[in-house]
Image (cartoon, rainbow, N blue to C red; front, side, top):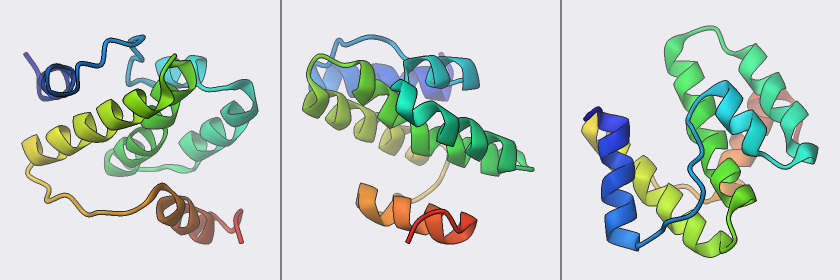
Amino acid sequence: MGMWQDSLKRAGDETGYRGPNVVRTIGGVGEALRVDRRAEFYQDVLRVSTGDEFDGVLNLWWPQAVIDVAEDPQAAEDFADLALAHYSMACGARPTRYTHEEVMRMVGEETGTLG
C-alpha cells in the first residue's frame, strides 16, 4: 500500500469517517469541489511549475473537496486533516500548524488574489 493510501486508511480507522472517496488528482478534486470553487482550484493548478508545488496545491484543495461532498462536514474536515498529517509524516515532513484562514491568506499574498 502506498503512503497516501496508508494515510487515508489510518485516518479513516482513527476517525471512523466513511464518507465519499475523493481521489487526490486534478480530476478527482475538481469534480468534488463545489462549482463556485472550481475555477480558483484550476487557476492554482495552472500556476504551479514543480512537483512540490503541485503536491502543495493538492494538499490545499483536497480537504476542501472532501468537505464539499460530505454529509458531515466536520467529520470530513477531521478526517482530511488527519490524513494529510499522516501523509506529511510518512513523507518525512514535520507538521506545521496553520488555520485554514492562515493558509488562504498566505496563498492569496503569493498570488495577489486575497487581501
